[in-house]
Image (cartoon, rainbow, N blue to C red; front, side, top):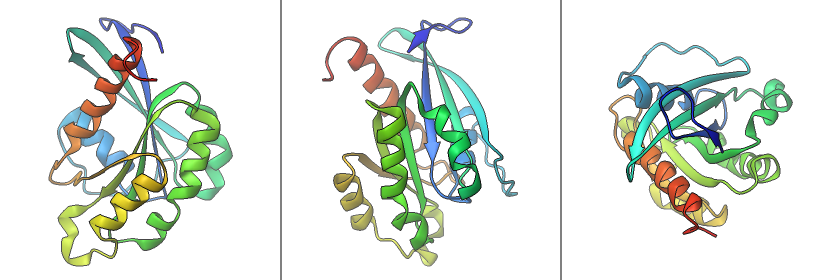
Length: 180
């Protein structure tokens, strides 16, 4: 963690990883702007979103590094993992391959981000009729990878705030010595 940016007490890096088109950009965009962009545009390299939140009286600048999911960008984006306090490992509940690739993403996070809070996110729950990955499978994957688990809908905004509140609270607790 580094000292404040602008009017924040502390700046925290959060990385969003996962296959292409799982909704990493939509999750970050929904959280920061409160809106959903329905057109898909692939992330090239890494985009950075920023939002200031207050947790337990401390102003925290969350810097959300939205990484490219395409295989050809993997080596490029790994350098952005360093120093991350949180890692959002996102899959699309309508895409089995994106779920099956989570262990690979988790290994990259473990290797390059070290001690960060990992959250497995099953996104696109608004597409429940197209679901191919059940919620209990996501919960199991979270346990297997030593991560928390949550399902979200960037489109509807379901559980988006909750994801980032968990990370901010984890960070504050870590700073205060409440997290090993």
